[in-house]
Amino acid sequence: MRITSKMMTGSIAENLYRQAEQILRSQKAVATGKRIQRVSDDPVGLGKVLAYRRAADNILSLGQDIRTYWQAGTLQEIPGIGPAIADKIDELSKPDATLGLFAAYYLNSIPSIILQVAPLAVL
Image (tube, rainbow, N blue to C red; front, side, top):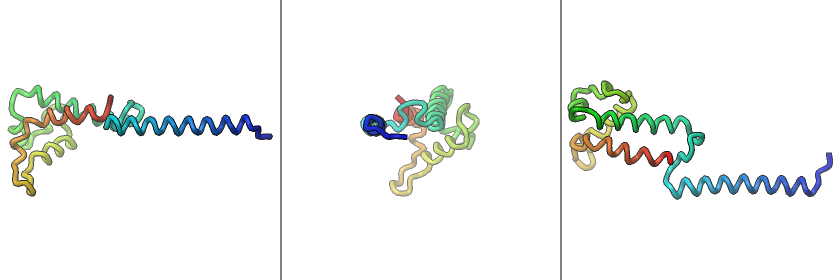
């Protein structure tokens, strides 16, 4: 098979276009601070984001203080709170050895923290 100059320039143009698209995606991720721009970028990551949002909504709709669930060790009884999210809440709620602050005081702000962080992943 003969390789013509038109085939070579077409191949080069295609490679340049592909690299330009990759650079554009990277720049957009840096500019927005969002790792996930589209569902196809990371379906598993999007699932985690949606799970955090669902958990935050359920915590906000509770009729009582989340501290009672945390102190009783029954966080997983809240719909949408699985072992992973319960562990994260527990981690945020333990005393901070370096600052000496008791983070359980901030338990009621966890849903707002989740809702602030979750949009960073998806447009």
